[in-house]
Image (cartoon, rainbow, N blue to C red; front, side, top):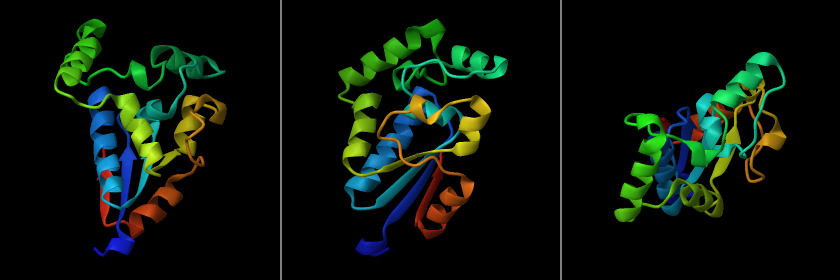
Length: 159
């Protein structure tokens, strides 16, 4: 892989704290090493791009918005959530070890020029509007755009 063609495509499917941290650490690490990075956020991974707003206008969309509401700060660990205390515990443990918080990792990705792309189909299904996403989110795209990026990438990950 030469310097001018380093590319990485990361499909961000999981919206749990640990999965988002992994995706953003890998994404920012690749970008810091000079790679062009695209992070395609689909289904639960959209949480990383959502504002702290309730979403949905139909019954099911509102139910999903209520049950899974919140932004990146509401992400819980995939294991050991302990009714919500797990998020606090893991944030404390990570801070004690000098691990960059998730919100800062996302900002670092933005600062490094990582393309944060939301999935159109997932947004349609979950009734999430473009206005419900952070301003820094890129164009809302479909799977064809993600495949186009992945075809040109030397690194493709699904997290």
